[in-house]
Amino acid sequence: MPPDAPARDALADPDPGRRQTPRRPVPTAGGPTAATPSLVIVGAGPRATGLLERIAANASALYGGAHLDIHLVDPHPPGSGRIWRERQSPLLWMNSHAQDVTLFTDDTVEVAGPVRPGPALHEWAGVDGQTFLGRRTQGAYLRWVYERSVAALPPGVTVRHHACRALRVTGPRTGRQLVWLEGRPEPLPGDLVVLAQGHLDAEPDGEQRHLSRYAARHGLVHLPPDFTADSDLSVLGAGQKVLVRGFGLAFVDLMVLLTEGRGGRHEGDTYVPSGREPILYVGSRRGVPYHAKLGYTWDGGERPPLPRYLGPAEIDELLARPGGFDFGRDVWPLVEKELGFAHYHRLFTAHPERTAVARRDFDEKYAACPPGSPELHALIASAVPDPADRLDLAALDRPLDGVRHSSYAGLQDGLRAYVAADLARRHDPAHSPDLAVFLALLSVYGQLVRLGDVGPWWHGYFSYLASGPPGPRLRQLLALSRAGIVRFLGADLRVEARAGVFRATSPTVPGRHVEARALVEARLPQPTLARTRDPLLRALHAEGVAETPAGLLAVDPADGRVRDRAGVPHPRRFALGPHTDARGAGAFTRPRTNSPSFRQNDATARAVLTFLDGVAR
Image 1: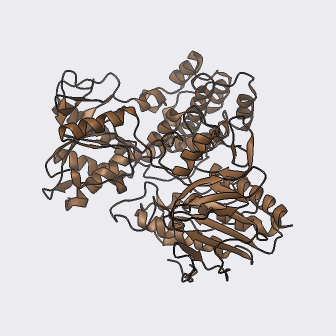
Image 2: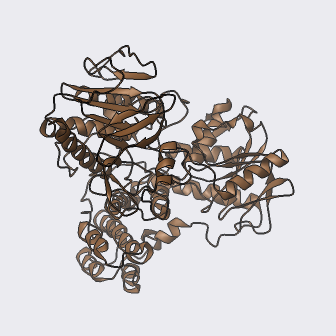
Image 3: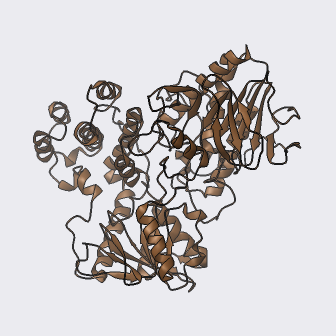
């Protein structure tokens, strides 16, 4: 930890379920007084920490009250929260380079409040920026940011952490809200409430309930979608065949915990088993793992000027359409053209020998072609001779479409070759247009936030291309495949409960199937209000807040105020994070990318402070 990291011991609190952050002396009463404005933040993880950082940055200009009480309600430690808590397996890594993680604004972030720079993760930890650090280190960084943010608050502002769950929030639109806490007879009053719970558990859907009941009847094991670090993996025995549905980041965690976590070890490109591992049969809709993180950085040359074809003007036009917009018809063609622009800009500037026309001519014709049009495809085909240098987003999305193997053995060889080729490409600067596309994906994500909930497909596609595992994890996957610990099932995986077992089939290997007595759903729960296990959000769902078709909490994009079913923002309730239709790219983000999350945090912080300043007067 850096030498300037604040080290403070917790002060005693008369309420044993409450932890205080000793920014300054705090009252010994059980809650805020009627004269003290109060803010309750439900959640104390990185999103709440980012909001606190923005409150601290804006408070001197917007809040003139002598005192303010801020209450954080979360059973997990402040800063890191549940997902990034420091008490978890040291085998679990971040999926981002250390240089790509920050909780601090910089001069690229378009905020009304002041920019307050701070160290990115690699600078704080004193490591090379290309390092993949463990999640426990990230938890320590988040705790440090939290403590630094609290220390930056003005005198008279007190922060308390309540280590419990919030059950519900009540109160009139025109008066103080009441946040009811688990195990407490009296509610916690607050002039404003911000819901920043982060990633949520969910009740199983109809299919998952059916599979769990089937497993119980037949003595099988079924693990529904969950955060892998919290799953009880002890029910998976040594040598047991386990079907795994899902090939993203949750699978990577599962793979690590069931191999190295059980005493196995990697020696170079060879995996040495402990004998305690189950045998994992993995498949998914795509049938392949997420693309590896890029293993090189920008080596000079002109960056693509982004946004170009999907920027604020295009988003304004989409939002202004009287009949609304359709993602596939209206948005995706703009996304495709934006990503293509970045790809070909880099190809023409860094690798002109692989192009057949002058860059200026190509740029003019590319700009004139309608998105997704035959004219655009013809232009690209004539200007870029090698198909391998062309951007084919559909092929990237479904690499196993049309691929067929006569046996599972053939699939193993074919998929190992695919993963090895992906690893080689993602670490080869000769394919640097891939990095340009990555930057364009970040730009597009930041623009699409303004459209609200555009459905789950886009978020999955973004994660598949831009948020995959570290390259070393895929090298470990190859070693585990060669050792027979991980076996591939193919694309469009179908799992049936029949004949007392789980049966997996895929059109990638026609006419074949694998049976097992254990099934793991290696994916995260969907954050819908109807099925979340968060009692407060379930209560809001029953109360009648506005929701998107995908079940996300609808909020005012201007400042995050929760909407009712009539679309009217609640004056005293806000929400930030993945359970809302204003979800950004994450609570923390890559530096110098004008993070939408930071912009949201700043807008909410300023709205909160302005409101509370009125209460204090």
